[in-house]
Figure (tube, rainbow, N blue to C red):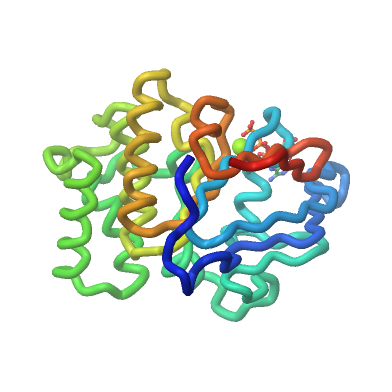
Length: 235
Ligand SMILES: Nc1ncnc2c1ncn2[C@@H]1O[C@H](COP(=O)(O)OP(=O)(O)OP(=O)(O)O)[C@@H](O)[C@H]1O
Ligand SMILES: [Mg+2]
């Protein structure tokens, strides 16, 4: 398993934290999270496993500041998300998200999709394009920049989603079953790539996955069950 960041000053710094987090839908009719407590340390890769419907996406959305808990605390870099003024800036600069259903715009090209977050962040075009070329090269997509998403393969779409998530150089990557829609061999390739990006960009990764063989390659594997996190001894 990959070691936690070696940088002494960073060792042990908690970048994501949930403390006794509760979350329900439909005005409490669907109780999903029942007191989740969780921490991710800078540079770690954490796999989040559990049965379909147990609340993995729900928790990731809370950790990414996309939604707020009913009760409990979520902090990103020690700042509480709930009530945060300009919470959207979290998603622009601190956290990249790869969604379960990639959420790319099918009619736009790979390049256009990836540039959207840089427009929101106010990055100048030259810098944004240089970053795109860098990420496309790292993910083997340089020859696909002007292709519409609808023409890309499943693996290429997931790799595009990874590029888009990293365009604004976030330090935390939340990935919701980034390989869930892919066959075993493509899934392995995309996950290898994800780990490579995590290492080269110095990221903290929290990733939901159903795939045990992928989960076991992360530094930690945590399991969601009965609305809570269960963690066995880590490697
Ligand atoms: N917006 C919503 N409104 C109502 N119920 C929801 C909503 N989002 C999720 N749920 C319900 O909350 C529960 C947890 O959903 P969630 O998507 O977090 O599960 P999951 O662990 O990610 O599942 P999967 O592995 O299938 O992706 C499910 O029962 C789901 O139907
Ligand atoms: Mg899910």
